[in-house]
Amino acid sequence: MPAGIGLAAAGEDRLKLLIVTDAWAPQINGVVRTLEMLGRDLRSMGHEVRYATPEGRISFPMPTYPEIRLSLFPRRSLEEEIREYAPDAIHIATEGTLGLSARKICIDYGLPFTTSFHTRFPEYVHARFSFISEERVYRFLRWFHGPATAMMVATQSLKSELEGHGFSNLRIWSRGVDVDRFHPMEGASLPYPRPIFLYVGRVAVEKNVEAFLELDLPGTKVVVGDGPARAMLERKFPDAKFLGPKTGDDLIAAYAASDVFVFPSRTDTFGLVVLEAVACGTPVAAYPVQGPQDVVGDTPVAALDSDLGTACRKALTIDRMTCRTFALSRSWRACTEQFLSNLAVEPPVEG
Figure 1 (tube, rainbow, N blue to C red):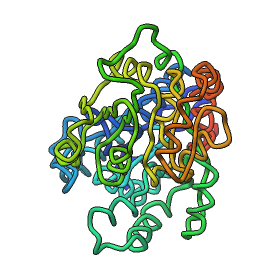
Figure 2: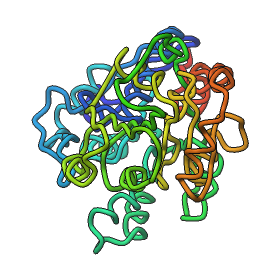
Figure 3: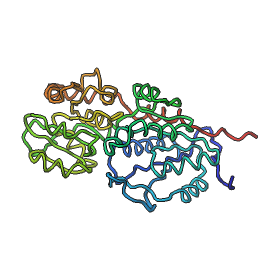
Figure 4: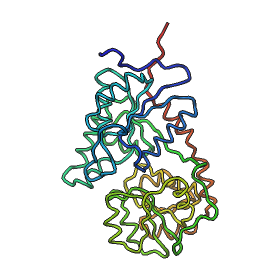
């Protein structure tokens, strides 16, 4: 083993964590927001966090999804970063080129590490490349995550599903919402006929945005976000309003000004945007599938129906203050403590 490669001995209180992720700014998605919030919370708890991302590395656009940049031959720089930083724990958040390099380094040098499962990779790959079966991708994922001391997933139902696919090292790491950042905004408005039905997220085939845009609904359909399917959907649905990506107060205002947040995805493992919407007081309409059922199922803040149009109309009757109250019970701190309890941390050196 080359000199200097190894995890530091963890102290009693303060940890040095390295989070390796192929998903990072300027991408705007749930994975990036989750990792950003995790880092903010960990630092507020006194821990030190460093991210290994494509930023500052030679990268290339991912085929069929150019917004995602994949680092080109990142092993040498990543190995140097681990040697210099000497983290107490390494978490690999994604299965891209950086994640693959980090996995190889950890295995080669005997460094324990954890991973997480953020998206339905098998279903997404099959949706883009129909000749690649979902089971083939699951085989890759079992290989990738198998050596980790823990593979973190967002919900119990997803954990049970992955166990059915042969994964065995699964731990729960749930998601929360920043209720100080996402909140009702008095006077927020959009200049369109109401009711306003809002979608926020990637505009891509796996998000099923077209199912939302095809609905026969009163008022206006609004799409916030970008992605490879946006141009096609703008041409096909000229009456919908495509506002592009939004962040900060502009995003909060879009949530707060809308009457219903529509979540048409059938494949998301969680759906962080659902919690962001209800934190802004906006009720949710979705299919009764795993992500929405885990996040808002059987609560008074959402209407879940196999007919998405019916769900949208039902959601118009939901009280906005009830949505805000529900969001206040979903803090990030509890989620961060879950993450910490799942980590593989080197024990302190004796003597």
